[in-house]
Length: 277
Ligand SMILES: [Fe+2]
Ligand SMILES: [Fe+2]
Image (cartoon, rainbow, N blue to C red):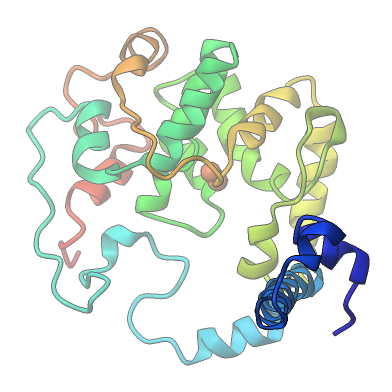
């Protein structure tokens, strides 16, 4: 390691200060200086080394070794906790479940969607966008693969078409940057999908359609709020969204799952994930 003599002397308080030091003190100071510089150099080198992302082939090889539920299944179907122990039964649902009850008993802790919606609310976005942010990933509890489409379908009987448009296509737009909205390709996707992943033709075609659509801004604004870099300790709550839900979510009086809507069975699936048929 090279020593910058001038920087070293300055760090000690100048030549006058160095002149007053014993040779032992100088040797100690030099050692200390070199240690600090070495730590800095190591940090610099670590910073400039590109992070190690898996390739698609490596991800596939890991998937092939997987046991238990596959990656595309929602967590609700995983009976094991992180430590491999039984998670036990999920809280029982009432006879007339509301969206809030699902938030409490099936989507919880729902931090990610609550944080997304909180950001949308704080930045003054329209209520429909705030609600789209609040709902955009809730279906992940049941299904992860193509969750934009699943989520939009789940909510179709209960919210406006613009909200389902935002939910359906946020998944596709996540793969495509847009400088105008300050949206970049997520670094986490290099890890999740592989560094060599390119969106499949169906996603490319969907992107081309959505990009030209008059409602493009709706799913795009969901992606703008769809961040994972929020303060993990920030306290979020459903409370600020209760009025917006009341204005934009048609809660069925029979309860979600019992209203015979085209997606009632999806709500029942989330209610009873232990049923074998
Ligand atoms: Fe999503
Ligand atoms: Fe998300």
